[in-house]
Image (cartoon, rainbow, N blue to C red; front, side):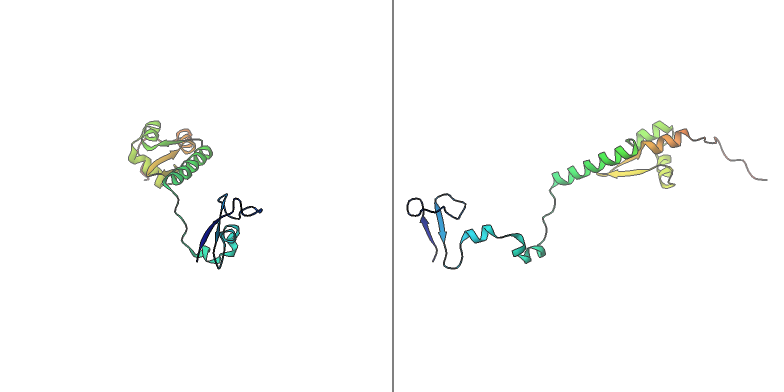
Length: 135
């Protein structure tokens, strides 16, 4: 049988629960022992499924990753901006990314291109026109 008893005026010692004036008495255990227990005393906790990150936490992690990659690559631009910068089509930007000439990153479904790789491509000497046929 569980009994709630007030310890406000009947005892000289402090209550062992989180409530200031109530002490829960149980024939087998007290709340104090449960609250004071450490996590290593419950080995079954490791087998429980872990809580999935919230949307906000996932968003913050993605933004932190975006900021870090942007810092390392000297900035990131959208594919259409990269196409305007190199004066080529968006399809050509995709071809350059697939060839490994430009670095492509995807954040939240949006594809962005490294500014460093764009500068390297713009500064490289490109041969214009169709290549000559070998005789």
